[in-house]
Length: 314
Image 1 (cartoon, rainbow, N blue to C red):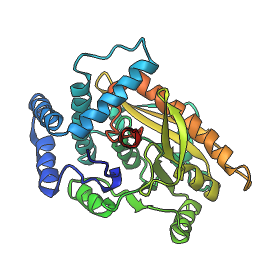
Image 2: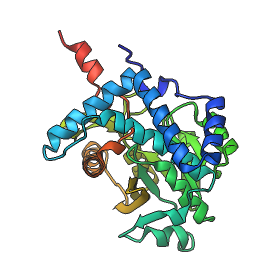
Image 3: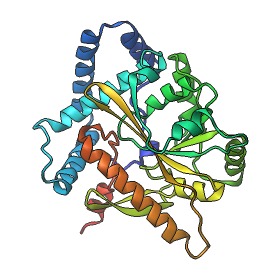
């Protein structure tokens, strides 16, 4: 059994695969692209036992938490098929074949106004993202709002190489910033960017690289540990937090934007409690997304740390 931390696991793909996928998405007609996506997803399904195992664990917890939810008999295969389709859609976004006009935006708190018409001197904000749905669709948002500066915070060392590959595939330039830990240099850079009105996007549903700065929350009826990073960052930068979810519904992407908190503030003796409350709220929102679109959860890692739990059993 491989217990390698997710950040140390190799990405499934390389430059040739990226180039080939770029050509396939660009030139194949939709019906043939669908066939190719199906074949690739079947290959991934049969050659990825770890992903299959973690998908099965997720689906068991989902059905226990939602007994009225009926998943198809081949739900694991369909979830991987959905993931492969999402990857093809990422390339379509990078190539500007899937644009802002192809999205349905749900924005009850009118984040659009702060994105497209920020007040003079307005500071940037934080977008809390997840690995549910297709976050690459946010590139369509950036392409539509040309003055909207978005920085994506990532936790792995492959960020620079991946960003170069995206540019070669035709993607718009969105800065990726590696933040393995929030040291003074990183915080100073992020503070300057927020003060200039730039926004930050960070995934809130994976543990950090070293795994030590986490908070325990209830997710799908079981304990999971998610990153403290977004809440620590928001508290240190004293800026607003918002949620961004993007899922496919009947062949069309729906982008859900909402306020999360004006800011997160704590005293030294209240930090753990405030972070716990914020993380618990976010976990509940993420769980609702999983209930509404169960096969679009693409976090195929050992999210509940089951492997370690099994190893610790006598």
